Length: 413
Image (cartoon, rainbow, N blue to C red; front, side, top):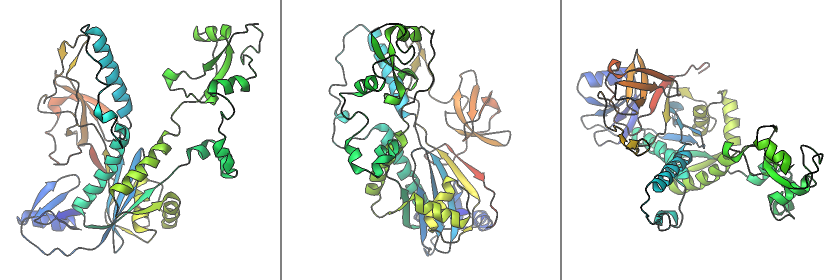
């Protein structure tokens, strides 16, 4: 399908590729973007359109989107990978700044004490703001190329306490009695759980000094929950850090992170899209199984938009998108910032440009001033080549450059 815009940029119903080819050949339309292929009519025309329902499968990692017309035609399919690297990037930036402040001996007053953005009311973390904006950005993009008259989003609210302890669903009073109920803190609970005895030597070392140890180190992503803590005597604790003892088990932190984020994303989307209808995952699953569709994010979105009604796939192309940063802010490198990093074009190419190499589409992931580049596809597969072998970047006129398409195989439709 080829998406069509009117002379005033209002979206019309899409047309077949053969019709778009004739319009372009006769000069009645001009090409706007290549992926997805969008044309704009040069002359005025009637604005009769059908109703289109947009379905959005929200997620904290990969979301799906689809658009279905009133007659049951699937007109648009996409899958978007949202960013999950913002927190680690900001920690690295903070580490570099702290290192630089220690190298520069001239005293400067700490800036974090008077940053208004960090203390303003209703502030969201950069990670949450990015994920919410990714959903809104995809919604706005579909509305810019299709006459969307109805919007349905699948949301989810998670009970983090029930995910950790399902027994609270039968006994509501357990919500007030967590794991540390009756203890001053988690350390006191772990010591009581282990009966104040070293869990490695069981008291054989006769060392009366006991300590609480993280089985998986916090530096390696270990959790502060009791399942990752163990009681050790000081002798075994020192031997463990010297590499003489190895412990098994433990738990990494952040296993409920995405569930917690989805609770906030749901609230923010419903505020930003007041006219959108809300549906839930169990309804989507039932509709998708009745329709006989495989488990994919874009097929979930089809189930959401069609509400379980039969559909016809007028398009078999899925747009795969990946949210990326706007640019690289690092200007220099080296211990004393003596080496400047070129941030402009090298051999005519900029970072994240979409290029073609040996008939395949890639994106420039990294560059070297000597003329070599690291290419990657939309799924992360890398390839190192000479930049002079590349064709010129595609001009998609689309604000997210990490976008590619792939055909899907459908049977029974």
